Length: 514
Image 1 (tube, rainbow, N blue to C red):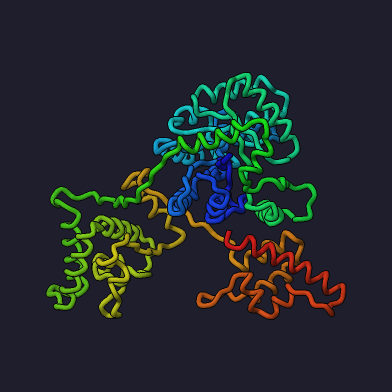
Image 2 (tube, one colour):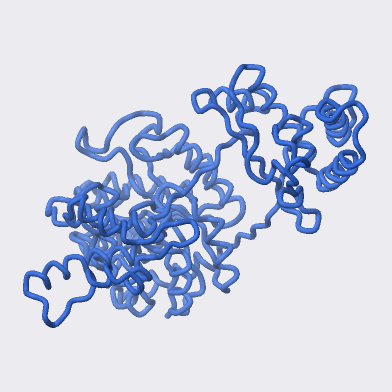
């Protein structure tokens, strides 16, 4: 009997999932599982990376998320069960095909822009509107069905399940889980009862938040970092030790009389098929009536700007460089990009918003200099255009622009007004736990003082030309190795102190890079 994980969290369930995507794929291959789903909390941040890596390693990727569903209208700010309850239920959504993936994207975006209250929430209205191509399972104990079943609200559970089964016809599954959390066995029994009454299929999952059972404590520390809690706090949220990435035999042992719940995972995987292709969609610049193309306008403005910079009669070396760059830019189709950047920089200057003189590889372009995108003469400083845009290795140009931080919002708003809000987006940046940050964050949850963790963290080299991981630092820095390795002649007090630091460094090694 094989099995496919359909409820699985990667590190993109930020500070809640401790699974690196490479590790998840490797584990699935080790267990000879044919496919794998990633269902991060409320987002699709890992979708592209996951499907690219999965395809390269020969495992079928299933893209999904564990969504947050508002108890009523997504716009209402209300909680389940009054003021002390949660303002959302969990629900697992899996893309069955490209239409389903597009609908997942739509649902995720609207959950953030319209339904955000504690978490990005969608509601039944959105689920009904964008249901096509999506497979749904009822999720964990935080799901709507589980909430009602464990609250002895059987009719409400039945009503909710019926609604989902009707909207997601032949694509809705009740979910049972294979771990030993409190009330999980009771919930599984009631789910099977409800499924029998409504003639609904049941699927087995394990809500994997970490890779191995032995990773539980490290994941627990990660939770503490995310929640700002102490590791020793008895009243904080804790996860069951069984929420790791299990093999098919382990899953089967939890449901010995119900082979169907594992077979249904294979059925969902077989019915899932998404193919991505990478395609650049270069933005276009609105042209004035007298101009036929972006290339024509770029050449005209660059020529005018060059004469303003270098004089009416362009020196031969300037003419050669200008013609060369314009040839590359127009052939690669990036004229519109230059025009757009030049336009919003010009608009900023006209509004009196300070703009930087140019930074990064774009300073090597005489076209950028002629358009007043940059204010640094690349010929004077012998800067290379090929570092910015190389005809032998075509990649998207990237112009770094610095605006006054107090008024940069005005520039963004100008671009939104000119091109439409739907055409403008800001890029997210993910931070990772580097060696020093891992030591400080882990130490804080374990009760170390700031001075203790600062001293230890500063022993780890962290320079642009020389930095070490925690593991490398233990091996190569004698002072850190002294903290980590007990000696035979150490006193009991010293051994206890070292054991405390050893625990900190062990956890830091496991969490570093997440």
